[in-house]
Image 1 (cartoon, rainbow, N blue to C red):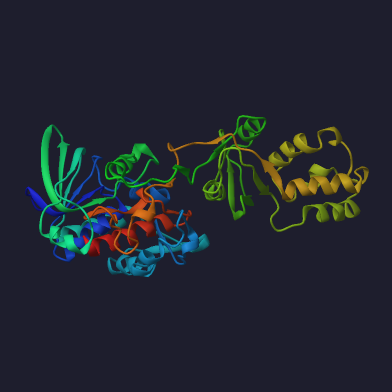
Image 2 (image 1 turned 90 degrees about the vertical axis):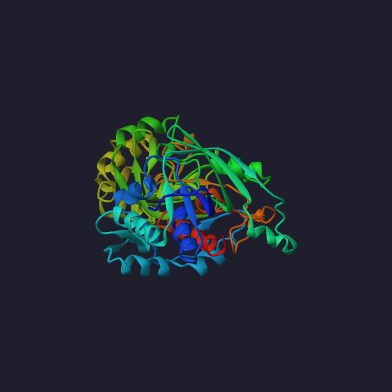
Amino acid sequence: MKSSSKNYDVIILGAGASGLLCAFTAAQLGRRVLVLEKANKIGKKILMSGGGRCNFTNHFVEADNFISANPHFCKAALTRYSQWDFIAMVERYGIEYEERLHSQLFCKNSAKEILAMLLAECESAGVDIKTDCDINSIKSLASNDSSDSNKTQNQHNRYRLHFTQASSKLSIECQSLVVATGALSIPSLGGSGLGYDIAKQFSLALTERQAGLVPFMFSDAMKPVCERLAGLALEVVVSCNGREFTENILFTHRGISGPVILQISNYWSPGDEVAINLMPHLDAAKWLLEAKQQHAKSLLKTVLSHKLSKALVNELQTLWWAGSSNLALAEFNDKQLITIGEHINNWILKPSATEGYRTAEVTLGGVDTDGISSKTMEAKQQAGLYFIGEVLDVTGHLGGFNFQWAWSSGYSAGLFV
């Protein structure tokens, strides 16, 4: 990267997905751009995503794939820079990719190829990137009313940043400041609340935040059940608060995880119950009644083991028919079998908590989008201050949607900084 000088047109805080996309978009339009990254390496979250293969977008992206207090906010950016735009860049770089379940797109080889592509774009556009940077303070240099009467401010630097790199204390100014700091999720990869602190400094509202795309834990009798089943995965339907998803659940030593649990966690609040359908393609009650006619002398757990793992069936037996474990199907009355079938199709669990930000893939909530332009990502009442990516109150479902939001919001801001 070329050597940096004292002042820049644009300073971007964060060298993640949204920050890098914004950086080269702005630089390609002639802006002098500096990216400041807190971590010692660039794009850590990109590299670890998708098991190291980076689920970089999805073939089908709609507003309904995102959660926000304003469900319409994301539409403009997703239209301006769609999944097809990012896919075109991936193909231009010759990166091999594959489509997996639910139209998710992954690198065939390594997430390193996505990061290398982004850095190559930054390099060719003349973007400067500094790592190991801690922001000490941000100062507004002028009146920042975004009305037309103040557009002359665009000719002058509007922000001064004081930051530390290694042991050096540095000061730098810019016209436009872009907050692409991510959020609270996975602090080991650089997640922090810096973006929220900046929003509060400039009087921008925040929505309530909590860990999203995160496993559940239990403190009741389900905890030892999950411990005994740890490592077991199966396809289920999980529902909570009017939303449902179909995919694999994974039992862990702490509770339940897997793609379907991560998805539903975005719609769960403490105290809520979740419903799990262990046989999503069958009416379990009807099937058990038919089994009673056809396999009258068989044990219930023997019949169920044709559909579910023996380990899971043993746990369900302890929970639902422990006192009748030695009875043949013929000895169960229809009402008993119907009740067990209903439990199988609608197993109600009450998690005690999630695993929190330590393992959460995203942070729900963030900078309130009411104070941000959906066209430019600029704060409506603070000229030259932009927020992009996960720091905003826009959270995607699992499946490449959070990366697509990073690309789309970063591009939108890059056009206007």
